[in-house]
Image (cartoon, rainbow, N blue to C red; front, side):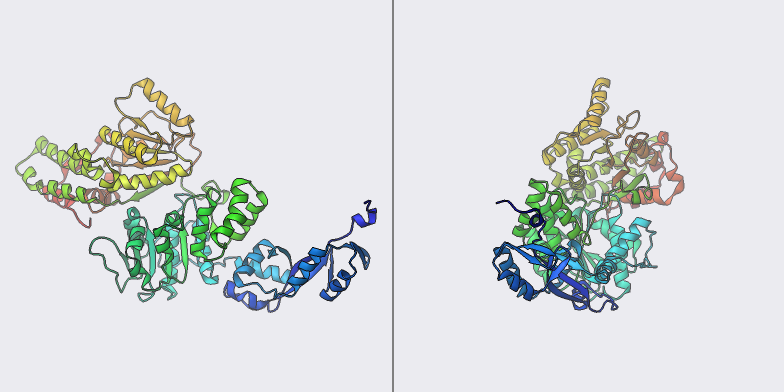
Length: 607
C-alpha cells in the first residue's frame, strides 16, 4: 500500500497523565503529602493537541486507519485505542510512592506525563535540601561536602525518603551520620524511649562507640555485644552487630526504633539470607544504609539495600530484575540505566574522591584508626604475659631493663597480631585474631572496588602469615616484600604491583618497605602492627603517598582495643614531644617509662 505523503505525517493518539498544582502555595511536609496538593487527569495527546475522551470515542467509532481531526490526520490503531479507552476509565491518581517516581522520570505506568510549570517547581523545591545548620553541640568541623551530605540526610528524613550513602571510602560517612543523629536528638526525635539502632560488622562496633563519644558526647551510646550483653533502657543510641541482629532477633524486633543505620550495608545484599531477613524485620521509623560498593556493579544487590530503606520503592525483586538489572547488566541499556539513576537519585548519593566538588576539599592523606578486639585466645595469652610483668622488671637496671621492656612489648605486640606469631604453633585462621579479621574486611572492600593496598608489618614471620591468610581467604595472589628479598626480586615485585591490575595487595615488612620504593598504584595503606614511632610509620606510608600519586591515600592504623597498643596510641596523640620522634630514635622512648607506668600501660581493660 502506498501511503500519501500527507498521511505519513499523521499522529498516533497517545495517553498522557496531566498533573497540575492544586495548592502549590502550601508547604510539602513529606512525599506522602504531595498527592494532596496535585490534581491528576488522563489526557489523550496527538502532537501538541489534546483530545477529550468523548472525541476519542467518536473518532474511534469510524473504524478507519486515518481520520482527519481539525487540521491534522490521526492514525488509528484499534488495539491501541481500546487500550487507551480502558485506561481512561481507571483512577489516574498515583500512590505517593508512584507519584515520587513519576516526578523523577516524567512517566507513569508507561505513559508520559504533562506537568505544568508550577508543579515542576513544586517537585524541584520538594527535593532540594534547605540550608540547615550543623548542630552546635557537634564536636567536629564538617568539611563543605560533608555539610551538604548532612543536609541531604536531614532533608530526606524530614520528607520521608530513605537514604543510601554510597560514598568512596575515606569521605567521612560516619561523622556525617553522627551529626544527623545528634540533630534528631536535639529535635526530640531520638530519645531513650525511642532510641536509634546502628547495625555494624563486629570489627567496627568499637569505632562507632568511640566516634560517637568523641563527636557527640550528649548522646548516650551502648554497645550491645559480648556474653553478658543487655539492651539498655536509657541509651539514645544502641550499636550492635549483624550477627547479633540475627541471633537476638526477638530482642531487636520487640520494639520500634526511631532510626536504624546499617554500616557496610552490603551485608544484606542477599535478601534471602537469614541475616538480611532478620535485619529487615527490625521495625523503625526511618532507615539509612551505608556502603562503599559502586551502584552499577551489582544492581540486584542494591535492590535489597534500597528496599530496606524504602520498602517497595523499586518493586519486587523479580520485577526489578526484569525492568532494570537484566537490561542494564546484560544489554548495557543506557536508557534504562538513566531511568534507574533518575528514580534512585533522591535516595542514593554516591560521591567519589575524584569529584570536582570534593577533590579540592580533601586532605591528600586520610588517616583512620581502627580498633579490633582481642579474640578469646589472644586475651588468655595477653593476661598470662602481663601477670609476669612485676617479676620481670624487679631488680633490673640500665641495658638489662631496656631488654626486658622490649621483650615484654614484643610479646604483647605479637599476641595482638596473631597467637600463632607468639606461640609459633597452632591455627593460623584469621578467626583467632581480631586484627586479621579486620584486615580481611578492609581488603575485601578495597579489592572489590578494583583498588590496591599496601599492608605493613614489623615482623617478617607475620608477613608470611598475612600472605597465606590473604591468598586463602580472598582467593587472589598476594605479593610479599621483606628483608630477605633480593634486589631483582624486589624490583620485579614493585613492577608487577605497579602494572598488573590483578595484583591488588602487597605485604611489606616495615624495614624492607620503609625506603626507596615507589608504589603509587596503591591508594590504601594499612599498618597491621604499629612501630610506636610516627616518623617510621610516615616513612612507610610515603611509599604510596608521594610524587606521582594521583589519588588521595587512605591510611588505616590497626590498634587493638583495651590493650597497651591503645594506651601508647593515646600517649602519642597527647604528647607533642613524642610525635616529633625521629626514625633513628625508634621505640627507645618506651624503655624510659617507670615500672609503674609500664604496669599501667600493659594492663588489659575493656577487651
